[in-house]
Amino acid sequence: MITTSDLRYSYSNATEFEFPDISLKLGEHLLILGPSGIGKTTLLHLLSGLLPTTHGSISIAGTELNGLGRKALDRFRGASMGLIFQRYHFITSLTVMENLKLRLGFTKKNIGSTRIQELANRLGLAEYLNKKVTQLSQGQQQRLSIALGLIHKPDVIFADEPTSNLDDENCDKVIQLLKDEADLSGSSLIIITHDHRVKSHFQNQLSL
Ligand SMILES: Nc1ncnc2c1ncn2[C@@H]1O[C@H](COP(=O)(O)OP(=O)(O)OP(=O)(O)O)[C@@H](O)[C@H]1O
Image 1 (cartoon, rainbow, N blue to C red):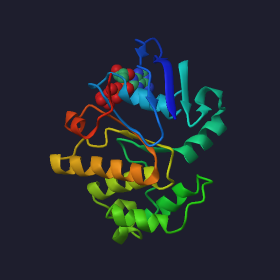
Image 2: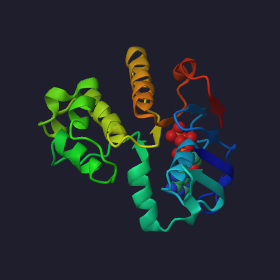
Image 3: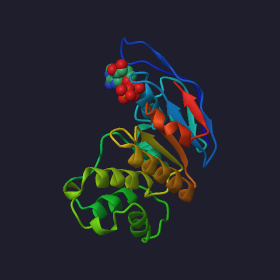
Image 4: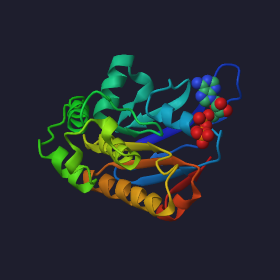
């Protein structure tokens, strides 16, 4: 479902990162651990096609990322990937519901109209659906960020440092939430982090 081979990347004139090969089946979870500056976010940006594959190959759900033009890559990412970043990417002039509807619009999958309400219920966002995202607390914004990554039932969910800035209790809750939601959608899950508290939650781990 996700396979990478001989992936390398270097920012201009900088040291080249070499990444271990990844092989993950649909529905499997993988934790990628590594210290700050080792290239975790770079790897995630390569896997999601936000950075071009300049060396090696990435295949997701049978599609070779290198073979896609920019527009096709954007469409593929919109339909097949769920991205949960360290920084939130919301449209602040819109409500929670409008942000989620907009995100659903990027996929051609036939996802029922009850999906938003169901997911909002599970993530504790139901009563905030008609609020502007700027009116949400940090924790609620984080859960919305997770909801935006999951709403379209992507083949693969990529989460970059989803537990940074969280206390132990919320760290456990967020990881469990991501795993449960990935399982419910049948999605593969890749979490990238330097947070060793997350280790005990995953059997399948890769160190950078
Ligand atoms: N756009 C860029 N241009 C040049 N160098 C970059 C760029 N983005 C990242 N780097 C450098 O590449 C290295 C790896 O960055 P990256 O963000 O992938 O690491 P990381 O392991 O995710 O770190 P952290 O855990 O601190 O987020 C760093 O030294 C960083 O300064």
